Image (tube, rainbow, N blue to C red; front, side, top):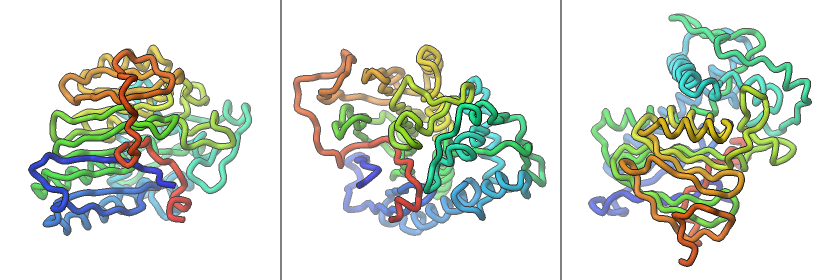
Length: 348
């Protein structure tokens, strides 16, 4: 099974034969980077950069900085980890606490998401889990946490890595290409993507960017779960229970990928009215959301993207969707919401 299916097209000024795409398994997912063939050296260095970030933010690798921090609660200063935590604290404030990296005390310590075996914690264990982002401290020499806190950067880490690669390529004066870490994508130039239904292989929307440097992040509740599909990995830090209102959230912006990655995570666990109010105030972020009823909600698209609605035969009430045209069945031309499998499983 392929876990990431996408088609991203640069403008006609660049012919596909002049572009080179390479893929590696990093940060627990498939990483695709497409650049002009003449930039092959930059491709190599981009993957090397992601490996360095993985060595800082991973909880899979016991030698990674974050894995050591979660075990010992005190490590020497790591610049990538420190920056990711600082960003995360600002996203915590932006989202009124719905994005909280101390969720690792539940997602990692109780459910063991990302490991080969997951568990179903009891209600008492969930109630007793300690979350406190203020219990994470950084100074010039060390990063530390309270003894009963574990950090999970899965809600922004891939977006953070995407930003770092985009910045590196910008420094090399490379302005054409695509960076894709699962559901976190940066189009250096204009691009197109197809959104795939969370319920089937139908594609329901064609998205065309209006600008270069478009950031895309998508989050879904239906691919990573413990003993049941209801026990998925997107957990409301305020209630220690799974988000139920949305099955997929796709955001588009010219802001950093890390930011909208974190926002997509937070929106996925917010109450519906709060999520929509949050998005309404974020005019620089376009959104396409599929809620638990199968309804497609979208907005803030005018200055960022164009949407062409495709035929969609499932339970959808959005009036903007044409139901009479034939469904685009070419699932290779789609962005499926992010795989969240164990990296060892992906490798196999």
